[in-house]
Amino acid sequence: MKPSNHPDLWRDALPWPGPDTHKHHRGRLGVVSGGALRTGAARLAARAGLRIGAGLVRILCPRDAALIVAASVEAIMVDEFSSPEALFQLAGALDAVVIGPAAGLTEATALNLAALGRTGAALIVDADALTLFKDRPKDLFGCLDRDDVLTPHEGEFERLFPDLPVYGREVAASKASERAGAVIVLKGRETVIAAPDGRKVVNGNGTPLLATAGSGDVLAGMIGGLVAQRMDSFDAACAAVWMHADAASRFGPGLIAEDLSEQLPSVLRGLAPA
Ligand SMILES: NC(=O)C1=CN([C@@H]2O[C@H](COP(=O)(O)OP(=O)(O)OC[C@H]3O[C@@H](n4cnc5c(N)ncnc54)[C@H](OP(=O)(O)O)[C@@H]3O)[C@@H](O)[C@H]2O)[C@@H](O)CC1
Ligand SMILES: Nc1ncnc2c1ncn2[C@@H]1O[C@H](COP(=O)(O)OP(=O)(O)O)[C@@H](O)[C@H]1O
Image 1: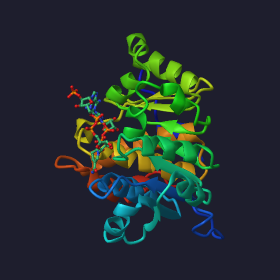
Image 2: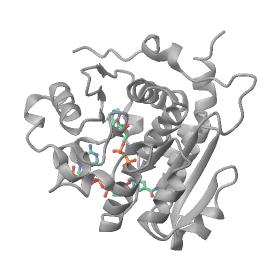
Image 3: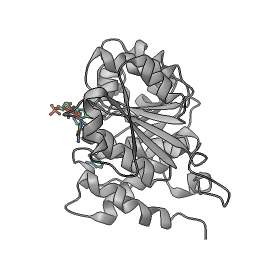
Image 4: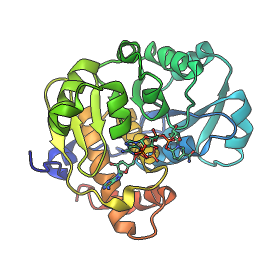
C-alpha cells in the first residue's frame, strides 16, 4: 500500500472550539506519570495534549512524583494517587488517559492500566504499558475497548505480537488491531494506523528527525488530546501522526521532543477552516 495518510481524510473531523464552549467541554485528558526520576515523558505528553486542544490536562502522579511534576508545569494540573483504586477515581472525570511513557515495568503499571480500563475514558497505551505485557498480551487486550489506541514502535510491537511481523508491517498492523480489539499505531518510518473494523492508513510524511528520545511520548499526548475532544480514535491517530511529522519538518534540524508541541500552533493554523 502506498502512503495514504492525508489531511483530506480527517480535516473535517478535527475539533475546533465553538463560541459557547468551556474548558471541560473541550475535553479532559489525563497522563499517568512515572515515579520521581521518570516524570519527563508524562510532561511531554501532557503538553502535547494541551497544545492540540484538550481544554484541561491533568498529570496523574504516584505520590513521590507529585511535587516534582507540580514544580515544572503551569497550565497543566497535577493530582497524586497512591493506589489503582485512587487512580480509577481520578480518571472517572476524564475523557481520555495516556498511560505507559516512563510508567515503569512494574506490576503497579499493570494494575493501574486495569483500573483505567474500568473507567469510561479512552486509553492511549504506549511504551512500558506495552512492553510489560510481553508474555501475557491477553491481559492487556482484556482491558481494552475498540476506541482505545496502542502506539508501539517495532520493538514493542514484536513483544506483543511475536507471530505477526512476518506478514509485513501493513498486514501485521491489521491483524494486531483485530486481535487487540483496539486501534494500532505501528510507528516507524512509515507509520501504519489500523482499526479493528478494517480501516487502515499508511503515513508518508515522516522524517528521521523524529528519531529522538521522547518524540513517541509527544505523539501519545497528541492522540490523547484529540480523542479527549471526542474525535474518533482512528481519525485522531491518523491526524496526530501526520501533524507530529509536519511539526518535526517545520522545526527542522536540531529538533528535540520538546520542540514538537511548540510547532503545533502553526501546524493547526494550516488545517483550520477558512
Ligand atoms: N523523557 C523521558 O522520561 C523519556 C522516557 N522514555 C521512557 O523510557 C522507557 C524505556 O525506554 P527504552 O528506550 O529503554 O525502551 P525501548 O524503546 O523499548 O527500547 C529498548 C530496546 O528496544 C529495541 N527496539 C526495537 N525496535 C525499536 C524501535 N523502533 N525504537 C526503539 N527501540 C527499539 C532497541 O534494541 P536495539 O534495536 O538497540 O537492539 C532498544 O534498545 C520507556 O518507558 C519510555 O517511555 C523514553 O520515551 C524517552 C524519553
Ligand atoms: N527514521 C524515522 N523516520 C520517520 N519517523 C521516525 C523515524 N524514527 C522514529 N520515528 C518516529 O518517531 C517516534 C518515536 O517514538 P518512540 O520510539 O516511541 O520514541 P520514545 O519512546 O523515545 O518517545 C515515532 O512517532 C516514530 O514513527
